Amino acid sequence: MTRECYDAAVLGLGAMGAFTCLELARRGLSVVGLDQFTPPHDRGSHSGDTRVFRVAYAEHPEYVPLAQRAGQLWDRLGEEAGTVFLHRTGMINLGPEDSPLIAGIQDSAAKFGLEIEEFPEEEARLRFPAFHPERGSKILFEPGAGWVDVNGCLRFALEQAARASAELRMQARVESCRREGGDFLIRTTSGTVIARRLIVAAGAWSGLLLARLNLPLKVLRKVLVWVKPLHPTPFEPGVFPVFASAGEFFYGFPNIHGEGVKLAIHWSREPMQPTDIDVPQPEVDTKEIQPVLEKAAQLLPSLAGPLPGALDRVIRAKPCLYTMTPDEHFIIGRHPYWENAYIAAGFSGHGFKFAPAIGEILAGLALDGKACLPIGFFSLPRFEEPAARRGVHP
Ligand SMILES: Cc1cc2nc3c(=O)[nH]c(=O)nc-3n(C[C@H](O)[C@H](O)[C@H](O)COP(=O)(O)OP(=O)(O)OC[C@H]3O[C@@H](n4cnc5c(N)ncnc54)[C@H](O)[C@@H]3O)c2cc1C
Image 1 (tube, rainbow, N blue to C red):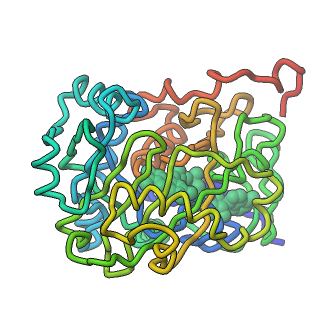
Image 2 (cartoon, rainbow, N blue to C red; image 1 turned 135 degrees about the horizontal axis):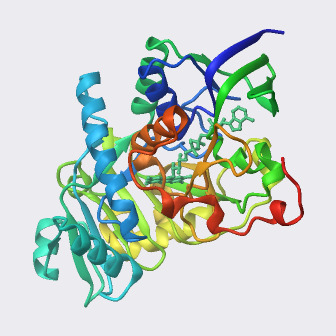
């Protein structure tokens, strides 16, 4: 068993942990990053190749500065890597004017003076021929939005973290973590490490790792579906933007590299037992695919046509995990009882786009207790603290 001491330990090397390691290592700290798998992987919340990036945030305007900073960092990281991680295809949003999606986008755009174009229905049909919006829909286009290359950017972040001397231990599952003196003693399946600072970014497993905090997290299974278009041209990148429609937030991506138009439903919920996260998710069932194809048949009729024939156009389908908080906003901040420990969890199915900005925030907190952007909105104490009420201090 090895026993070593680091300035900081990052538990989890998925979206949030990878960028936190990178930031900490580049700021000169000795860092150990630990993951039970080898990211990028299919077992957590970052599977499925691509993620939507948007700034005019329907969920709450508090996210806008975080998205703006993340956008700068995605562009900068892409330049550094000699590639593009954030593809700014633009994003089309469709729905009733008073829907949470459309009203929320307009609210954030107005508060921050963001660029949003509104298209009359006829013009939208000419510019984006694949879409058949419902009559009376409001159609908003955000030109700076787009999609992020998940695997490319995670690999780059981890490579660069290692280059900056972070020690990354893959296939090292953290089994327990406790305070010893002023340090943290972290027991893993590949040895014990000691660190002066602790950052927990364990995605769907955060509730288990911090069990005594009784975090208000619920893990849900979600499915992603890739469809081979019947008529490819209107779905090509450059023609077809990222999109979202109001109601259940049905959304999708262009036919990237000819690998299919990826579709999913963000806001419908199917509860899942927390114990399920430690076994590989079962294959996606046809019943899980059908609701997605029903929505596609309405909004994008030329993509796959109606059911049941549309099922033949499905190339691939994958499960992925959402870690929900009760208000669907993130938890970012200090551990309630441990000094020098920080938590980034509960990303509720919409965290990836912010990952490099969250890495910066966590690195700032761990270094000198200061976040580079306001994070009060994401604080854990906004929820009840049952552990504290019961007098349990983990
Ligand atoms: C279907 C789907 C679609 C999504 N679409 C979008 C989108 O379009 N835009 C967007 O912004 N976001 C999106 N998200 C959300 C986004 O991907 C997540 O918010 C983000 O990946 C969360 O990052 P994380 O670091 O918390 O979790 P993860 O990326 O899952 O990383 C957590 C890591 O911790 C490791 N870990 C856990 N426990 C331990 C342990 N005990 N020991 C060692 N390692 C451990 C895991 O192995 C994992 O690698 C989507 C999510 C899903 C599931």
